[in-house]
Length: 279
Ligand code: KMH
Ligand code: ZN
Image 1 (spheres, rainbow, N blue to C red):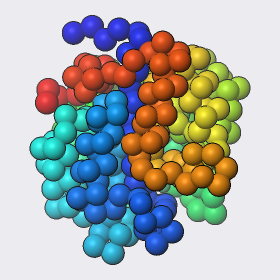
Image 2: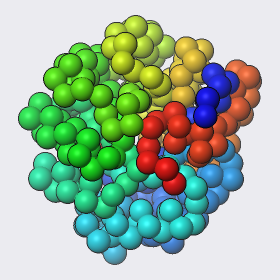
Image 3: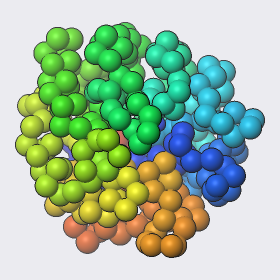
Image 4: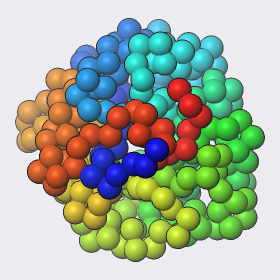
């Protein structure tokens, strides 16, 4: 199947690891809430979901059984490409983050370097990146390379030179911009990042954290990229107006795409774009 250039991959990142349920009761933290959000976002035009799970106390979790149950429930209830976060929370140990692949998702996030993350450090040393990448190749899980900084693009170039192409042969990356400590969420930074991408990259998307979401989304569309949106990344629609559901953010991304004459990609097209295993 050929995926035409006007097809726009909208990824939803509905939960994340940073926001508490107490601060944001509408954040989907239970499996039932996550599945409902996934179904609503698929109906609104999302084709992939980037998943962080929570435990019974709504705290971030990398529990293996919960991860496997989540992948199964999302596959049962939707056609979305299921991407599990291997970033977890800044407090998760590297060995547990490697075990995420045991849950056999279609895709996994793979961050290309250590980043200051507000007052914390999001640790991604080279040996961990290298181990996680080789494990993804063995397990036939397609990585999405998360680029928080320009140096991460250089590390991606090094990784592909060292270990070859991912499972499926496609290289998809996502610029995560506007994290305090990473590259700014500006059009200028995105243009620099896209210009530095290695030739093996077959597709890319972007997300801007917090108030950078619109600048980054519009810049990504201008450059022909794809979009990630969701309550992991932004909690207001405009100053003082809280996001009530992930569906609102997907609807806004689809509307922005329509202005740019892009139409939302189907999950089947997304599988072709990304090179994931068949559904
Ligand atoms: N929660 C952040 C520390 C990922 O999902 O791979 C890391 C993160 C990236 O969200
Ligand atoms: Zn994440």
